[in-house]
Structure formats: C-alpha cells, structure tokens
Length: 362
Image (tube, rainbow, N blue to C red; front, top):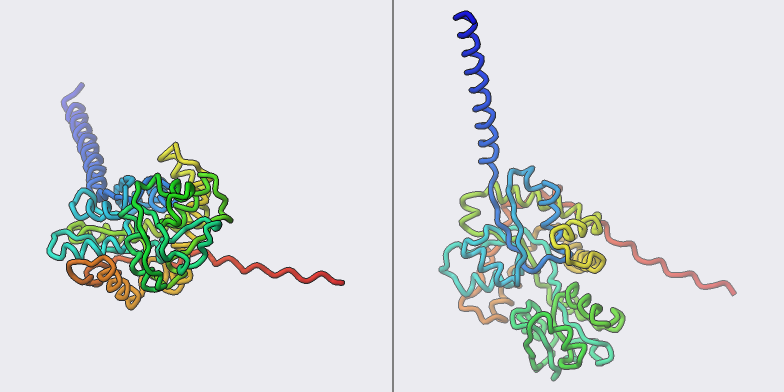
C-alpha cells in the first residue's frame, strides 16, 4: 500500500467515524427532546382508561415528542395528592376533589391545575333497587345510603340534598368492592357511585339493569363538572409546550375512542389482561353517553368549561365540603393549553330519536 493510498484510507475512516458520531448524536438529540410525562389515573384500568391508553399505544404522544407512562389509581383524591407531591406530572381527577385540595391547602406549593375537561357532567348518581320504591329524590328521606367515605357522589351529597330538599339520611361506609353487594343484600336502601361503575357492578351481582332505579346528579339539579386532566404547577411552568402537546395527542385519541369503543377496549385488554372486554366496552359506552358526549359538552365544546357554571360549582364545593378557604376557580382551571375549537370538535353526533311506530290500520 502506497503512502497516498494509506492517507486516503485514513481520511475515509475518519469521515466514516465522524458520520457515525453525528448519527448517534442526532439520535441522542432527538431522544433528549422527548419530554417524560408520568400520568396518574383516578382508578384501576377499566373501559374509560381507553381515553389515555389508546394514544399511548397508537403513538400519538410519541408523535408529539412525549414519553408518557400511564399508571392505574385508587381515587381522585389520591390522584390530586400524587400530582401535587411531584410523584406524577399529570393526572385524571374529579374537579370537586381538586377544588377541595386547593381550598384546604391555599399556601401549598405545586398545586395541580385542571387543563382540560373530559367528564363535562359528573357521572355521580344515586342507585337503588326498584323494589325498594325509590324512584325520586324525596323517596330517599330517612333511608340508609351506602358509599365509601371518599366517593364523589357521597362527598357532593349536600349539594344534591339542597337541590332536592331530601332531608336526613343515614350513611353507611364500606370499601368499594362491598358497595353494590350491600345494596343487593338489603344492608342499605341506596348507594351513590358513578353510573357506569355501580350499574355494571350490580349486573355482575345478578341484578338486571331494568330493576335498578338511577337518579343521576345532573338530571336532578346538580350540574357539577366531573373528571378533568390536571397538571402540576411545576410541570406547567417548566414544560408549557409539553402540556399543549399532551392535550393535542389526547384529543386525537379521544376522537378515535369514541368512534370505535370496541377497538379501544382491545387496547385496555392488552394493558390489563384480566378485564372482561365485553363488560368494559359497555362501561366505556356508558361513560361516553353520560359524562363525555353530553348536551352540556356539546354546548360548551369538548374539553372546555362555562365560566358561570364553574363559579357556581366552586361555591357549592366550598359550602358542601366546608373547606378552610373559599374555592378560587381561576386558580383551579386554565384553558390556555387547550387545542383550538375546531380541533376539539370531536364529539360523535347525538343519536337520532326513535321514530314512533305508526298505529296499525283497522
């Protein structure tokens, strides 16, 4: 090998090495641009979890340069606390629980903020067996109501009571798995819970849906917002563009979930193999119909809120929960990270009303 050819080979080797380093550097830089987001659900993996698991599985978050991990939860209050502590960056929690945290911890650092409404109407309801004779709020007077102490419907009971003038009831506390069982056994006269949770749990215990009396809070004057996506103050401050990106990806995924719930449940099943896919598809469809794609959501647009309604809820929560300070709704909610209205126009068309049958000709 001549001196010139050796020099040429050396130059080629150096150039190849430099190109490899550049490639690795570029890949490392692209990865470094991904923002890690730890997300806390409000409950275990069930049908509605599809709203968050689908955009992970389909790469919608990754396309926005987000590395999102979604963990199951055990209640909205815990989800709020874990985001506030910094254990999680974002989460999914009942807005009333978030308001309560703010009002009871006015000077706490890193208080979470709601950045997108998902359950425009609270799914909370009173459920009873029809054989009990309970068909309206007044029938609950003097009855035994059962729910875990942290249940959203139980916490908001004073608001339901005030709106419907029910009067005194006796509360019985239990762990969540026992709630519907105690109703079936007759240990309590009625329970509070999310419609799409308790109704299906009652069916699993042998009760037919047509034998259950359901009093949804929104149908009886309690127009509370339900669950929202929340983010910690620190995460918002450090990663405002990541919050916007998260909501864009979530919105894209939510549209797909509502368009094809069955396919969405397959993704939940892949994450948690023990779920009953048929049952969870029904739960998801119930959640969409009763909490997400509601008449109020169509009026206010998906993801957004109505200021006066939010202010009323803040006052109601302050009174019902006897908070240490009044809820300041402007500290609890912001819409500055929401995608545009056109991008959020994702709610499925409302079902057409059934056409009444024509009377038979005589």
